[in-house]
Image (cartoon, rainbow, N blue to C red; front, side, top):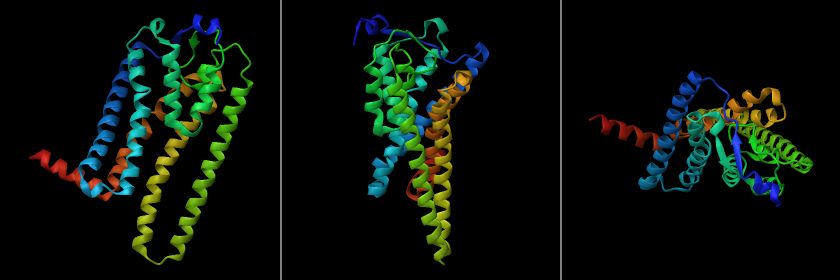
Length: 267
């Protein structure tokens, strides 16, 4: 990495371009959302670890979702809250912090290619010190460089297309098989349970899919910068906030435990 990289080791982050009044409302909304995300997701983890009946493979695997949601919210929201209280000309971040934030942002979204993707961006020397975004991600990193970034763009677009088609393909195939089983089965209770489970999963998937892919595509169009920022914030707020409600209340054992805690706290 050449001297240009070290010349710009401190970077200015553009942040959200909103008015002072709007920034106050945004701060309050994000703060409430973050507290809810942390409390609800960690609460589910505590319930699963404290209740011996929940020490089963299904519930242990379910722990991955709250952990992922906590990481996804924490990697963005606290820094965004700080920037909302900071003058736009003082929203600095070091290059190392920017790389770490980009790594965990993509670790939350797509674990499989995070190291390679960030590695392709870090290998570039950077000659710019301004990020036209409200947080650091892979696209923001390689846009700091004056070198040829064709490899980064091709890899990013290729992976996006592959992820999009494979994700939609697997979901479509899975639901078709479930639908075929339900049509052949005459057990109304089983069919009802399958529809309930699949519908909640589909809702979460659609929310995650839309809020996740909109910022990726809008990154290629500078005229939609503010829409992209809003979409990426929602990607780190809505799924982590909705998942505990949908999945936590759907699991019978967790729902019963939560109702029991609510009854005990009311007395």
